[in-house]
Length: 370
Ligand SMILES: Nc1ncnc2c1ncn2[C@@H]1O[C@H](COP(=O)(O)OP(=O)(O)O)[C@@H](O)[C@H]1O
Ligand SMILES: [Mg+2]
Image (cartoon, rainbow, N blue to C red; front, side, top):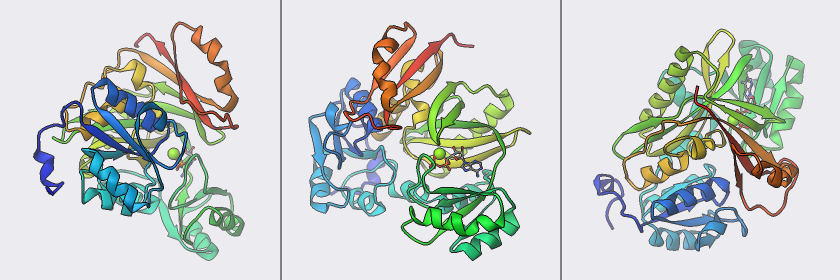
């Protein structure tokens, strides 16, 4: 069996090759569609019977991420593996990497799966983050609060998403309750306490890096949340050129330092005095990059497929500005109305059950480029 490391120098995977996709949600679905356009096939591996990604390919394995027999068969049927969900167990990625190239690799997953490791990594490459401390009990939270000050945010180190596993603290007296709140979400008794950032805007930069080290960044975008879930992305962000350049610079530095092959989203805060601090990383296409499908020469999903297959990256240049709005729960019932708007591009993910808050689709409105 060839060593996956030496395969890095090998020729690009030719059209007709099979990309293994860990995860069966909408991100995998949109990547599989991008793969199909380039003549590749996607083999989707995930646990959800009617997962959005399973629906768009006939190569699909319905199994748990820890099922080694299923993983071995999967590895034997694909030419490279990527993922749309970063919380696949590290052991799963390591098991696959012994058999087939995994891009990005387990090292990137390992860093991005844990908020403490992620912030330590960012500090090690001189990327600014908010001040933070590891905490292991309510007394530890109180001690860290004395150093970091209030307000602060206590988070689980792993498996947090859409604001889950987080608690805000206004005074030291909140330590006990905040700890109890995150403990219900945490697998282990460890958390991260972060100084609260009084931000002006939340931004993100999606960056792709190819097997040969080529980097393409998308313009920084502005993200607006509702009930802790992304509501709207405005592309490009309405910020100074200087702030935009710094944001892109951070994204490039992170992609390089991770030796990334794939796509990563860098979430940042911009403070009122134009300080930029990185909040978190997602080593895959990101909800705030969905606008790139309709407004850019190459979408974030196509970049992911190109990187994984060892192709040159495409141009991330935008031909239009855009506003992307998520369709949550019953919002998707407006599909008929949205279709009637000439500049609106509708994307639905094929989910049957429109539970409140569930991401059912998104709509991108194209605007003249500023
Ligand atoms: N240190 C912080 N200061 C201020 N707001 C924060 C801080 N950390 C998180 N938030 C707010 O909570 C949201 C969710 O936190 P985040 O760390 O991005 O976790 P996730 O997106 O994984 O749930 C952020 O988008 C931001 O609005
Ligand atoms: Mg986030």
